[in-house]
Length: 492
Image 1 (cartoon, rainbow, N blue to C red):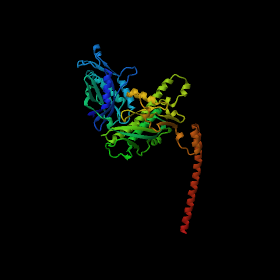
Image 2 (spheres, rainbow, N blue to C red):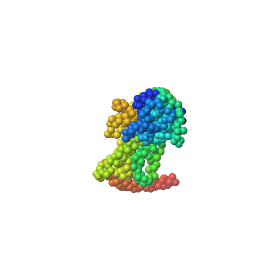
Image 3 (spheres, rainbow, N blue to C red):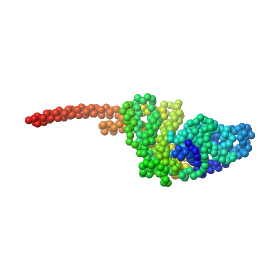
């Protein structure tokens, strides 16, 4: 349970000044930071306002009890306990904002709650709405399984000016009694963080079965493969700056620490499954994922290792979601068009709907690459770029979702992934190694030749097998004769 919350003083003071100068009656946004189950404390890095919705309206508004109350504005000193004004919040829009922002955060950084800028009376009259908003944010941007099952709510009151913090238990029913006060103070949070980086290389072979219980699509196979690999990754050993992690202690040295993950030797579950089912294809999912992780100087190193492992899996899932979202949009645009346009559809266009067993030739798909943008101090946020996209797309996302300055220096953007994740879907006989080298070369040139090559290889193999049987029988007969002769010689 979070008993105390510490906020980055520099960022929170800037947020308070921004809100005071805006003269807004209310504002709602996301709290970015981390909740530490080891320390029972929360750390706030920054407050990010939720942007205007698609209709151009703010995510929150103040419902006044009368027309006279609307004229008072945020600086009115006449607000009292008898004021019946309350908050109206676009809960779905705030949750969607949290979902998109969570994909841009590195390991150890999370959407841990919401903040609200409003007077005391409106806050007290809106606890149910605030709890519902917190629940929606938690569902849209869940924390890891090991983290605390709670979120925080920061209330910035403008009359009188003060900050208060409450934690909200997600397991409880939605009521005002679930908001419990907790200690809140400002201090140096970001400068006390330890920084870690990991470049993780992976190479997965995912089988495609003929007699699947349901139609398999490429996203289905990839999501299942990612979930299986996530379980394997949990058991990986970590090497920190060249040393195997043995003692789970806080990191005392400064600077950027390099992390290497070593997967344990284990039986290949896919291979065992293939022996029981008929495999008609293979999906090769490989590439590299770069991850940054951040922990407080008092947290154990195992925490950042767990954060990095989770971040790697979430990064792969985010890239797959991007491909599927774009494919669904492109498919909707092609509905109602001629058949000729359907034949020209790329894999990205039909990947979310195409039955994977219908592929007749090897197909390649490159997932978006992950890039890192400087954020606060030495912290980085991330975004994903398609091969055709430029850094201008990053600027738009950072300004809209993270409320960052539009003047981002592109020279400071990091692109450390040597080989972005890619997917190769092929038939089984395109990846299986044939016995005949000539058949191998022909199958790599044209998948239509595979069947012929398989037949010729099978015929040659049958002839070779018959010849081997004859040779074996001959040597068996010869050994019997020789043994019989040796017995006769000994007796004589």
